[in-house]
Length: 89
Image (cartoon, rainbow, N blue to C red; front, side):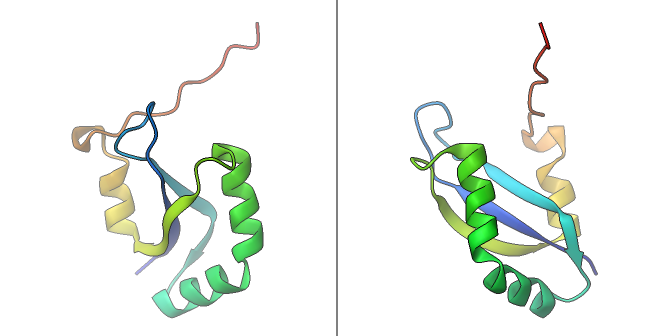
């Protein structure tokens, strides 16, 4: 089984239901490994989330999530909307 670190962000006016950020640079075979990594790397995780969402959108929850649930989260049938790609010009 594969696990990912997932952060559920606080809601705001633009995202009243909140948003999730899935860290894909590291995956883990055991949930214990994932939890240990997340605890030991909370500062870089927090910095990455702050860069993405700003200081006014702190995470409500950071958790280790099974790959199947992550795939369900990314399924458009479940309401996933891919981020818009910005034009260079």
